[in-house]
Length: 175
Image (cartoon, rainbow, N blue to C red; front, top):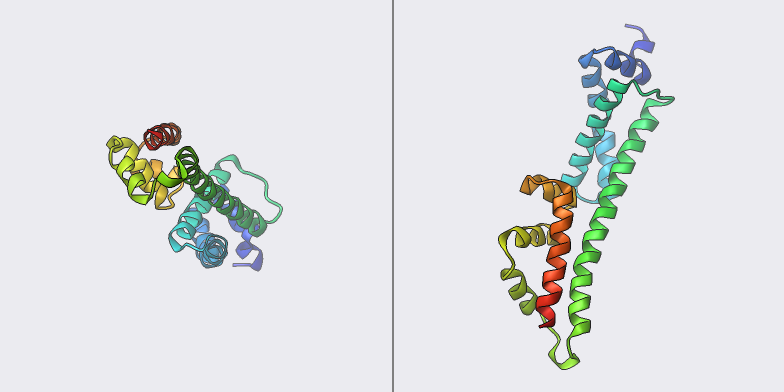
């Protein structure tokens, strides 16, 4: 086998032609470096593993459309970087949404009767199971996509449930 046959771009071309052994070689070559990169970006082993799998799924999608790549390595790391950024943004959105619930309830209450964590937990306990599950998963740091996977529902349904969850908690904490 020539050196050219081992080049990333050559392996990608073979993959596009249907050679799944080329995929295996690319996976073996980049799994560890991508994992290290994703772990450094996210600080969470499970999320980093998810990003690796999503990155290689993107590679399989790219081969179907025969996406032209100037530098395979740069493209692969760019995909992983975008997936990491999406997860960080999603995490921040979840934290902001939960903080907004707490902030709204604290702002709405008189200072001498500010709700504490027990009141919030009580309000969450009175939620219907569908909303309570979303709350617990988001409070555990899962992204909307991960919550959707756990609950086996569309991401849009998770978002609408989150909206309803916030509305109900605000209402309950204000009364």
